[in-house]
Length: 338
Image 1 (cartoon, one colour):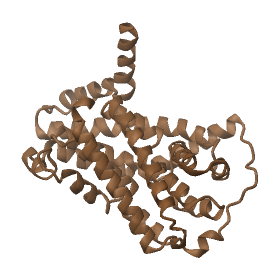
Image 2 (cartoon, one colour; image 1 turned 30 degrees about the vertical axis):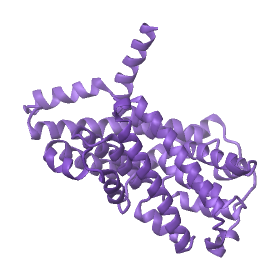
Image 3 (tube, one colour; image 1 turned 180 degrees about the vertical axis):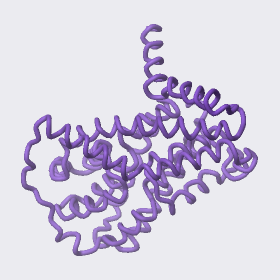
């Protein structure tokens, strides 16, 4: 048993955390650039090079694999699967399907229109809308690589719980009248999708991986730069005063700061990593990351095109409250994640 645990630990450290890459970049910084890792400049350059390379390597591989899986779940099939369930089971199914159909918050809006137009309940559609950008296989593995498996798996559980709870509450409130009328008449095609062979699925996966990397590379670079600045240049006492564990409002502040921003989850991970190394609670860092991912300003502007103000406010309120409670829960159980 200990041998298996040791083997799994080696795989985790070398494949996800990429310790080999950490050491290679350290050698580059110290021997080629002639910089001391303990200095601000040396530490910043190492953080930037290591995190950028690690995220792009993991992202490219994971998106390729996930896109291959996603080729079995086109929008029409996703809608058909969700249409088989009712009640809380439908919300759970929508949240789970959101994890294997990793659309960003903006690209989820057209699916929202299609699902509502195809007759899916509004609450089920919102469960999918919350889960899809928030929880996917790539983000889980990246969380495990940057933090650990406890945090990654706990993040999945609370993310799915938020999606199911949020969708269920919206169903109970019967808010269909606050969806713009044109959405109900926008029918999604239900024709059978042509079956792909393996070569077509591999080509689709390659195309998706290249497209997603092309879309998010700038956010990743910005996120890593911000993370490097936080990690090496901003004094710890300043961060502690605003987002530190002793500030009872730190989670709420982090959530509210994240809402107006727009970045992919892959761009926010380096920021969350840097915040945690500065003593910020894991819940506070994850709340910021979740708010940026699930409630970005551009996606809310798009959502406003298809729902009325009251429904948008209720949706943002439910998700904001859920993210805040999740943050405080993570902070309260912080010792468990060490």
